[in-house]
Image (cartoon, rainbow over all chains, first blue to last red; front, top):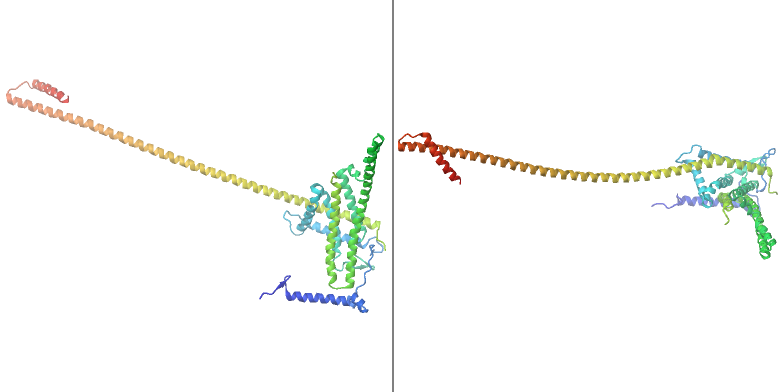
Length: 307
Length: 165
């Protein structure tokens, strides 16, 4: 009689694994901080996890150097990306293998994703910035998930910390995206792009009409002009607010994720945090996608003609 | 608890990111782009080549077919010609044979006639001699033999002319 198989293992093995995982969860739940809180005693020593005390500002693991732990992590991410791309492009072949295949897949997927809304000409221009932002955010988020990553201490401070949780990094990326978008917009439309922000022509036209005797048309024109000029100011504001939203979306999500994982580890040390690790991996990808994708979206909006 | 905004960190991260961007553009994206384009070109070329080969094959097929049918036609023509020549030769041979036969027949006839004439002559001469001999014996008188011969010849000649009429 053929044994029933679930997920490629025999049913018995699955049941045993489920029982082990469940037991670990229950034990760590009762023996950990939550159990200690309920029973009023101390948590078991092996489950004793220091309560997290999150700090938003990046720590300085070396007191004498102006280097934060997020900077070190960013460098590691950058080195990983360098390694990946160097390995892929060092000996390029027409028939790709291994890493070249992977990197080409990444590049081509991004190229298709970007050229779909932006077109071929602009797509090739947007790609470097959008893809690099995506890869950088993703690398930062995923490197952080390596077990034990944030536990290495140096002079009492964590040596490594997810770079996305340092507000300077999201802000830096937002500024890069902002400058790139404005540059592309100006490049595409020249002075017409500036008219999106400083639109005083209709107002001037209204005054001209008023002084040349067309009173009714003049007042209408002035009213219209004031609205358009105000819309331009709103546009300026929206571009700056966009930068802020870029920054805090990434910073908030990443920081919240990090704190949530730490809290889960503190509360239930075994099994359950794995779920949150998976979630963090997913959110890291989503946030990278959102950052790169929104940069692409705003860039498209900036270069496309309004008419 | 501050947010941790710090100009130095910001600039440091900015420089790091710009280095990443620059290196990725020159060592990553550009070669990959080039490779992808090259591959696309190669594939396009291969497809075109395959298409061209296929067309070439089709053309060759048609040409071969044409040649075969042409050869067949030529063969047919040769066979027809050969048949014609054969027929003509046969006719000619027949004609020649007929002619030859005719000649033989003619010659034979001439010969026969001559033979007959000769036989007649011989017979006549013998008859004449016999007649003279008989006449000599009858009359018992030696006549001028030559004179008589002439006389009788003349008479015979007349009779022959008569017969031929």
